[in-house]
Image 1 (cartoon, helix red, strand yellow):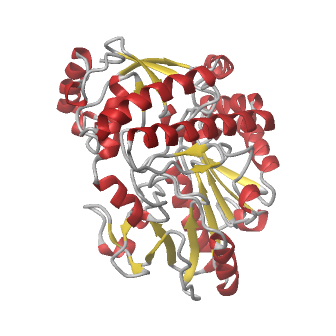
Image 2: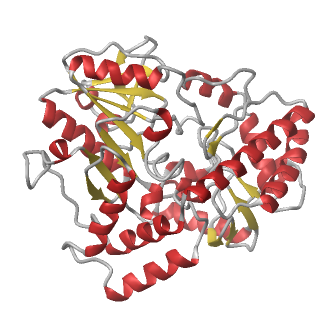
Image 3: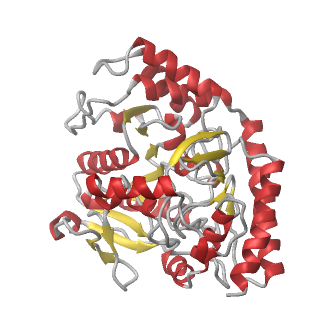
Length: 434
């Protein structure tokens, strides 16, 4: 188990995790509430978490792991930060949900809009899926057009229109990316390779893009890509939407737009702005956002939208971080990434460790990855799965998928980086021998 140094083939979840998984499979499809948690792409079966604090989590069998999942990036401060816990406890004491407006949602909306130039208003929702789904509906309602352009390998939630897969062409009309999604639901979805400029026309309502693709590992935008998208949208009257459910308030205070020098028409935020609780936000300029009900004809609603526990958590996180914290987090990630590069080189493993601000990822690839085809090729060799399991044996929990980012929190300091690199050096040598 954790820290034992056993070979990868010997790693198994502990007996309590195994029993819980068996129980879960009787009442939850696959035993998990989100598919990636099943460990299908890395082999084996998942551990069940009992508690977490700072950079670490502990499973139900008492094994402690240095955690680079951090609730898929939602825990910017680390797990169970005292300020967040206190804010949620105080909010819960006043009531957990009202279905009515609260001061906290106004304050969180003010915090987000103040940090994002050009984003005058936001609508709070409960998930990133809701935020992007609403952005697409708003874009269609505002433009009177139907077509949506997305990028292969991106993930914008599980709404039908955005669960589309591209074919072999440079730009193809989408095909259903899941059983249960009818062809008609994606008939107006165009899928294009990331870092490739699409040809737009007057049928396009919006282009939805991650300013740095972080759902196929980490693929930074190439020079001119985002600028080209902005110009292409402007030329045909389409809207540009940045899906920043991952990058928003994680790369810096506010939007990645300030880093890449390109401003979209719509933003979708999540994860960090909810402080680890279910909350996301759709934002944009005032005239565009006022097309939403109750002011305009585009309908959106949610019983738990602006939930008082989630807004309290989000406000607590945003109150804790400043520019210096983001700089420190970026330095930590840079040190981690450069150390991983050295570990792989010393072990004779060919690998890439791309970095974009406070994000990094691992590809076992001979060349930098620039799109989903490259990410798939890197995942296909199976080395990430082997490395993941070797790291888990040594007490370091990476994302259980080769298509995810390694999320570092502000609770990860020099000691945690040193522990990670020591484990990585041993794990890389083990993988290289196979």
